[in-house]
Length: 327
Image (cartoon, rainbow, N blue to C red; front, top):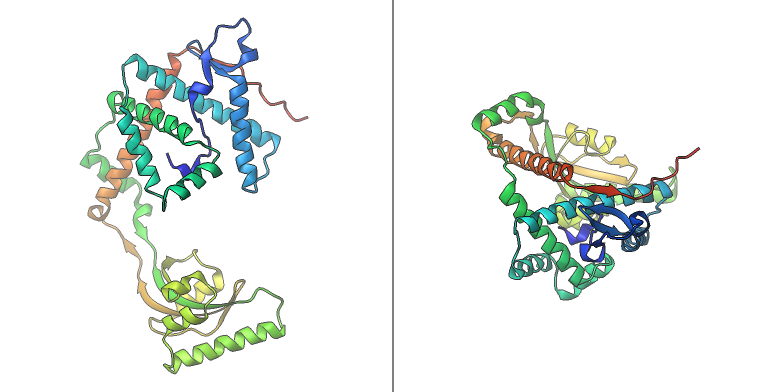
């Protein structure tokens, strides 16, 4: 699980689940799974916490989105509970040192302990809650590895996929270009526009006169983040850049410096450093990638089917209220 994107955070089921023994389960629980209730109060707190997190990031959540989020969260909790119950039945456990390793892997993605804790704080997750989440995830992974049977990917499967998806393996014409951008997003005909265009004309003249290299000019003058790479934008195909820039890039010969190009970002000059004609990847070129994609898709589908089978055999009762229909 990526701590940077806890979009639906189940946190710990221990805080949400209790034995459903009351006479009116709908009042106390949002769902029961094989007699274990998902507590309504804790569920509502979890919803509020996640909604607050979204709103702190500048998002506005309306009632329809809130209802949708609640349903998706409950679906995830039910699935997790069904799977963990099956793991318990089959005696699937994970050692705490394995959980330690997963936490260590997550911490290693950050510059240090302080950044790690700041990320947890921004996600409104404690380290204890993260540990519970990782433990549950590892148990589920262990159960899937033990129980889910994934069909093998054969050479015939790979060849058939290649034949049925020819368009995916056509690589369009590409160019590699570098540019210098002087930003201007104001009205046409202003003194500021004239000044920026004049500045760029002088930069172009200096490049053509070999007073400065294109890469050094980009590093010194460009307003684009690509300046750190000497203006290099790497390879791109048609449809990736704004039309005016794209048209000039594909029309410019390798090694030439273009005339000034105006886009909604400002004024550019560019140089093309390489061009690649359209290509068709052979089966040999993409065989390994197809095999990996097919394996992942079959793993996903087999896991989905396994979960659905567990759900169909479980006694699941949902008490979450449906949103009122808009009149």
